[in-house]
Length: 232
Image 1: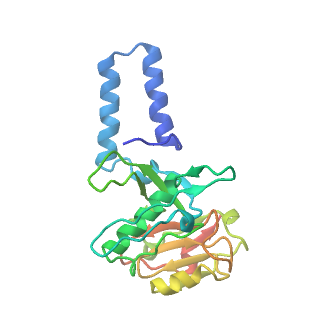
Image 2: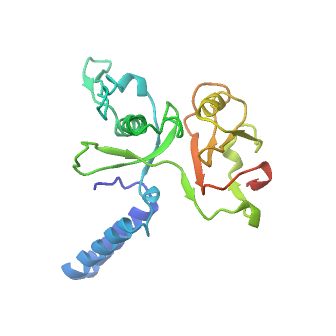
């Protein structure tokens, strides 16, 4: 698995390896450090969300090709011509988003989970060769399974993220209403169906905005109200 060096976790790991090399540590010591890091990724000690490359997804429609036919899993990609007529493939984040949507539809989960649209902020990683021939994978938002509002937990949200500095929460209970919420004046949207919190940064315009999208996912029985969110 190849991962872009875009977060503190990976930067620290490669910094430690470089320090080991400069200090003259043995090859076995460095190999052991790599093995420990790999084990921590595989067993979940280091969450995949800490490794993903964060970005906003744009131009999904231009790069989305023919949809998967009945019985097929994946759709095709379009090549888009640039200003000088050169055909370009889809950016990694867009390919990952299209594949994410493909899999939701294939497994008939698109009525329970929101499809990724233009403006959704995601985290993605490259994948090694696999039977599905999927090169990139989406992983969005922060997972907060231990968050308990009843016990007094509060979610701290940077007020700079909210267009109107308002924490007023819109609660939806279906994928259809979640889609409508992307074009509302509420900056924070809680999906009671999937126990997920979204940030709407562009008001009534289509999509969540360049820096909007999934903020956090919670345990199945979690329900958020305004009092559970604190602006900082």
